[in-house]
Figure: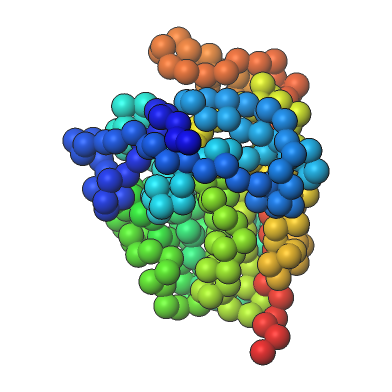
Length: 307
Ligand SMILES: [Zn+2]
């Protein structure tokens, strides 16, 4: 049985899926078991755009089911693109110095020993977007370090390159070099199969390399009412909590060595959302410092390969 949904599929080359490209409705979806524990029992958690996110009754992971069939989830979608209901991409970007400072602060906080050692590092940012993380990292890594970002959306690559940031549209599968650090900033929720993705990532990681992840703790929320933004279903397919991400990492050969949670519902956040509302844009309003939502940074080290 297929369900017609408002989900907009990429037709052919995902990079060509821009404003003036024809779009089509996805008709093929599939019901799936929990991607973490493989149980089928679940209860409703949230809904949007004709899709439902459910919470696993066994492990608590939140995931979309039925979801678009794997062949309809493009690489661009997988690593971080949000489309509008009209199927066009919003590529308007203003470089945010505040965001870059924020990431620089987090990297200093979580990579103290590596930065203090002064040994050059190679760092790959997967789903680099407009290059904010690349720019942040470039300011703090030891001299001689090599930093690179990959991003499937050409307009974002173009923006980053215009700022002289080393971002390319090379697919992960085509990367040949190995790195000391790989970062995944707000990419996790887009990935239909995190186990398979981690297997791909391991290929580009040196022994003992570090994986640095940021994702929201949606899987720790009882209901989507506590989620601070639109859910972006089905571009977002999985919402994990802190333990869920740790379990995925551990069973794929990573040792979690650091977790840092930050709340988003600050006074500044509220002011920004009020401003968005005033401009007629979509934004949730809530009492500051009351939300259980956190954005969470994970640092995990790849265990040495056995062979
Ligand atoms: Zn589960």
